[in-house]
Length: 412
Image 1 (cartoon, one colour):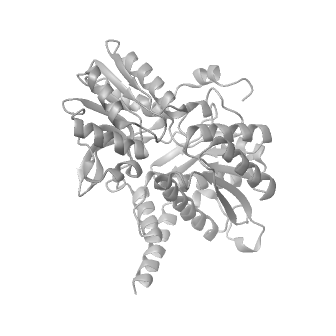
Image 2: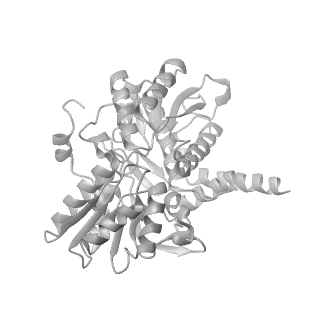
């Protein structure tokens, strides 16, 4: 009986999604997609190393896949996603990307989470002229300093999210800042952007301590002790996953966060906040995703369809996976072919709806205008919640086209 009820709920939710044009803008023709040769898209992500984000991401693109194929596919053909684990390392990811393209015959690639992995796949995409939609990697080198004609990026990067947080941080009564970030591309670029953007708004601030633990190997006791010893007024945190859990728990035990403001990248996303359980800190200023209180018509339709399908609430990864596949499908339909160069041309300037609202892939840097939410953390029933949030449109924080032209390699 429960299964019948769930299937009925799924049917209602999918109908509602379709009526809100989450699938309809693909301009799909009403043919039987199953009778045609499938369009193969290769997906690779850190499914083993970072399941908290990547499993919801996979469920997101699976929901999109169902909607696309049940609506007739693309160019009268079904989409087939061939998914692999990228190993969480650049070398492994390159091997997987090559297998997907050479052995499996995929037309294009999507996915990745870790920034250094995303950069490796981007370089592969440029060398082999294969389109790559970097769904999650946050380093801005993907869009700017190391950008290329075949790489697009969905999520707002470190510059944009740092700009959103610096806007709030500048209003705090805090002059002395400490930072803690994982010592690899994502952490380095996030701290660089935050320091630059905060100083532009508040020239009086100073950074009195920096802690750079290796990714997922934080010595939280030593890190929090060093921060406390520097006596900052506020802390900028960029850790996530198991590093964040250890940092929060050790810092709370030692009283490091008492009478100090904390500004934290990604901490308001349920993937990274929920593992803290009842230890979720109160009042941190964060970027995140209010899945349970975002009640726009489009997001509600997406949330209901997702919950009916997977019997679980959506996560940020769910939105990323869902929108990634929708974007590629619409670009292929617009291009009228699966040729990577043609699809890339179609994606420049492409607009489409997402659960957060309309987004556009800018022609200048192939970065989407997807935004994110800035709010505060709150402990709620042994889990975290993002409260007092506002949605920040990525278009309002991205640099202008003339600046991008200076940053990107010539001819990219």
